[in-house]
Length: 120
Image (cartoon, rainbow, N blue to C red):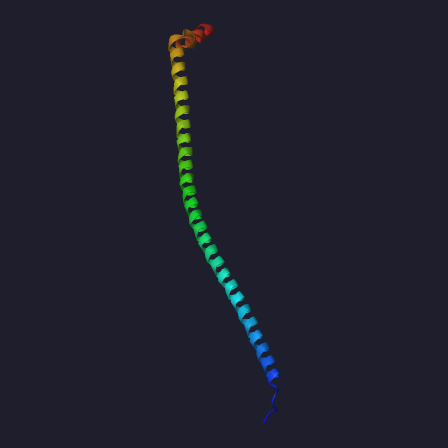
């Protein structure tokens, strides 16, 4: 039979064990609260990342649309430039034709007559 301890020594040990268990329980509660807060923060960050991703996808679609519109505008600008250049060339040709038919200095018959006289 093991020797008996005094009553006060056993009570002190019981109190010490009880206090140790209470400290451990408090530490576990604090750790559980911390893990709960971390879990909530992770969930909130996940929602924020999801919202950011969807916003990024929307912006990407808008940028693609803007690029298409910009390409169309550039093509229209080139088309208008070609049309303007064709109109200017046509205008110059018409002006030269009018000058050639109206002013004798620009006429072909005048040049032929000028060279014909000089050759004799």
